[in-house]
Length: 225
Image (cartoon, rainbow, N blue to C red; front, side, top):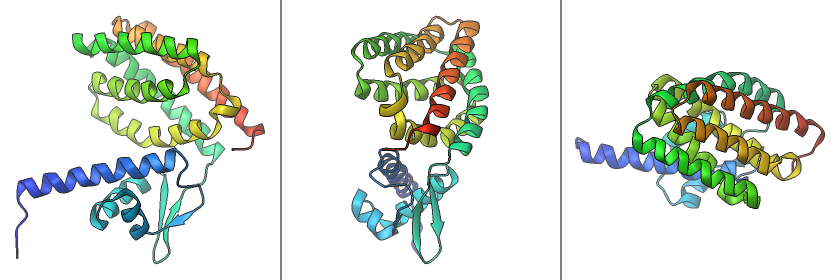
């Protein structure tokens, strides 16, 4: 029996990560519709990655709540549940406040410079109502904040919550979101972290989550597109 080398293991893990990222993007961007059923073979062909990494990625996606694996039937893309989203926000508020505060205290000088850059770019996205730039910067700010916070448990919690939150935003933002306001609120968080001000960062995080909760509740009266 052949024994896998360390290099083989690294390549396999990289393919699993790549499969996860590609399938998650398909789900978040609604190219895989909520309630639809697909097979491992279809996903493998769609994203151009072999079946074994796809299977491992699907286990992670199921853990994140984006899919349900139906034995002998296929992969169900999870439906949107507004009540679950509101429950998620209760947890996300506390975790994001912790991450913002820790990042403000623990970020390196290079990270602080990038937080300030994100703040400037977010402010520009607010001025120009640029949704593409906003979505890119939002993900970068989330990832950088988690890295700078230096807390593995908080990082794992955010990994579970962010895909569901991004998909919910993408479905509804054109109908009910105030994108310039949301971008300004993100800029405030980034600027406070970049300044190393824990109190301001936590307060800015709370203001952002206040807005996100208001946005979420507004979707109750607005059918998804």
